[in-house]
Image (cartoon, rainbow over all chains, first blue to last red; front, side):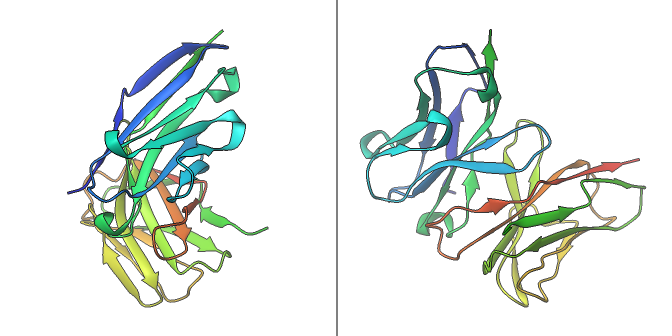
Length: 114
Length: 113
């Protein structure tokens, strides 16, 4: 089955440092790609999405992600971490090879140190 | 405001009981989904529906049942056959096709007591 992999279940950065959360997908046809954020005991909020337009996608709260077909990746970055960025982040994919359903990675918990 | 409403936020179930989680949306979305979330496992799809009176099993449907009698509503029943129901349950809706994002409710935390 097609899948999505998030490298690193926990990532810790210092406030002001670069945030890099990794996501790789497995389908042969580029899927639609999404990053969501979840705060404790809440639902998921969309950060950004790639739907075959520009490969560099800008989202909310200063986050952006770059689609790289050759690497089958869609890594999430933010130049300078804030304490409020501490949350769990999920990469998700959809498309024909995923049955047009959202398939989620296992999530990465981001910790921001002061 | 448009959105998805899940209720209750917290639910406690005794052994052998069935419980029903509510999910209502006013976004006029055709597709609705139920996910189960456990620590370190991401979101796993339980059931999904793309049209009224029709639904399909997801990856972990055993011990769960759903109905889709109205476009706006997609309730999930956790039956006594589900041996490990303690989890966080999330409902979502979207336009059909996979190109657009899903919108999520605030979740229901179910605990077996």
